[in-house]
Length: 126
Length: 360
Image 1: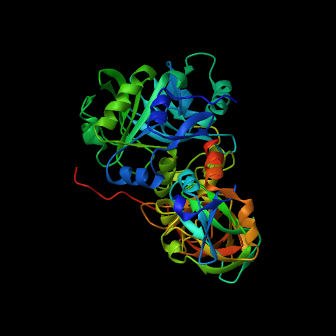
Image 2 (image 1 turned 30 degrees about the vertical axis):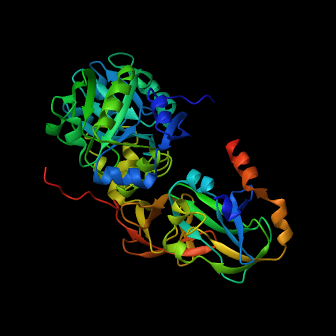
Image 3 (image 1 turned 120 degrees about the vertical axis):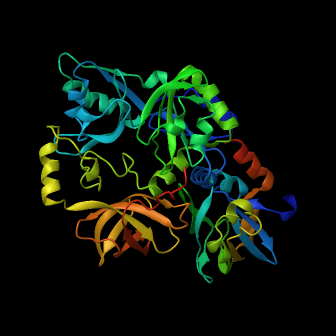
């Protein structure tokens, strides 16, 4: 997992940079905590988000959780297949379970969110 | 508040269950996955710890007469060995709690919701006659397991006497499970065939272990909730409160009393003249689940709120319940406000799911 070069927000979204785009989803820890994901609501291409702004919703059998953008940017791709296969959030959150790709408007924000080690220490404490 | 723990608490933790507060108890919500546990009950057999449920014992020569005054079921004609689903009604016909009454040889056993134990006791105690009826709260010393699913009878028959396969639905027998004294009923809260097994707390652990060893999947309260909602079974605090009546909840079939009981005047009036609202099912047309509290609209006007809502694992689409004006027919397209969207929903009769007839 380390080779993916993941970074994390405190609200459990991950971001990894791929071809200059920020690929965003939720962490395996968050997916495990939610349980079976049954519904994902994602925005349209072209929408702009600032860091920590709500961009969508993920629902398990029992709970509804908001999704927050870990960095600022403009949506350039949405994983529409995930709408039909929300269970991929549980089975492969860093692969098929990706949610958005953003064109970052302030890539320096990446330096101010949690590294994988910091995130793991954070969730390990809870 | 200190959460209470069932006699099986350590076993749940050892199985990796996620423990949550529920009705004052620390209970397993899931072990592996709610969807997998739900499907185990529909297709095979699942085992639930429901020891948090409350048990009241009512005995004495006036026991049946007393109960007949507090529920709309026909308790006076409930034969030994039979079980009836009913409600404690208040003076206005509203529901204080819903419960099962088990008619045993020398007493009536009442199984009430964990979150309502204190409320029920406070409701019943002032109604007790000065003599002839004894009521005790046995919730603390009784463990309750629910073994549910098409294979439940076959599994339980391997460790229980008399043979539970011969027990008819809504019947109860006193016997033994693994040598421990047990009360076994053919009841449940899942829409499947199954049993509820009352054992002394000290025997609960080995009965639990054996039923798992015989192939039952441990199931948490998460699956219990999706199973009961698919089966159209109401849950207190969601479909029921002190203002809802059994007539409004589309449970008029449970009203069988031939005598006077608390709330009878209003319930009779509703049976004769109808109600302004009734409980209906909503089948969502899209993928987004309608959740408790979401508003239901007809022609742009709010007409009710969702009581319970989830994705139905056995059906593959989201389902919900709501009290709606009595003139809303089955088959009508309404809208549920989900965040900022108006999502289409079709009204359907409860239950959403009925178990297939299987050869016995």
